[in-house]
Amino acid sequence: MKRKAHAVWTGPGQGGRGVVSTGSGALQRQPYSAHTRFEDEEGRSGTNPEELIAAAHAGCFSMALAFQLAGAGHPPTELDTEALLDMQKEDVGWTIRSIHLTVRGKVEGIDADTFREIAEKAKAGCPVSRVLNADIGLTAELA
Image (cartoon, rainbow, N blue to C red; front, side):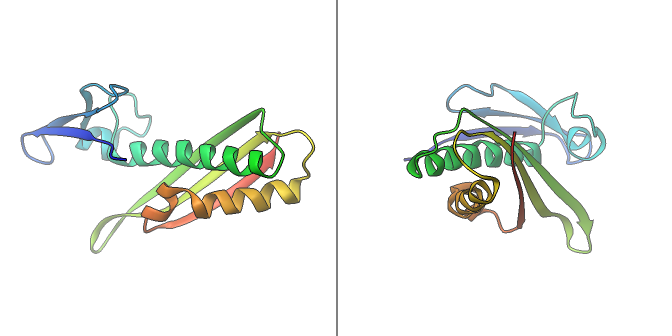
């Protein structure tokens, strides 16, 4: 399986701007820039690579957890996952220091300890978790 995304950047790093698109069409010429990456904390003026990584991680983990829960006989009604990515300026440049996943699940017939245990397995098995070279935290709660 292969997936494709495409980015076009024009201009210098600080004053330039770019657009990012995905092969599926989910993103089509979505704008991003140094402003949207480093200055606009609200993220209202466009996206940035870190936001897209966080979205990919939340989506991948949620799907992995749904498969794990169903395999354990507890198919979820709903999994609501937030991925909070922390990027800090270091001596070597900007570095993604961590991603913390918070999931709240509506799952019948399962206790909180079992839910957390299965969530940890899903975090470890999620392809996006495995590709990232960052500390990936997790909070798993039943709704």
